[in-house]
Length: 119
Image (cartoon, rainbow, N blue to C red):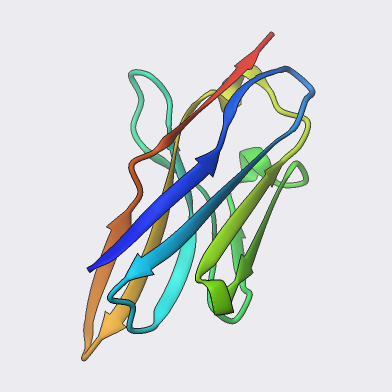
């Protein structure tokens, strides 16, 4: 089992910045993808951005140019720098990772951290 512990988040005014981090621990074999999803109140969880262990990224169109993901493979940690935040960025941000163990893909989620952007 892999545990994901998120930190960061909070309340910020529109146009401001926040940063999130997420560290994986536990019985780690080889984490492939790490990233962030978010869920606004009353809406479905959606992709924010992911990054592979090789550094390839996949950003949601809504955050391109404003958010930056980075990763420290040695520490099994992923970071999200969020700039020019908008009220529509408000939601619970969930850390995500997956790993392939003997041909099976296992996915793990953090407990989530609240990000609130006031207008």
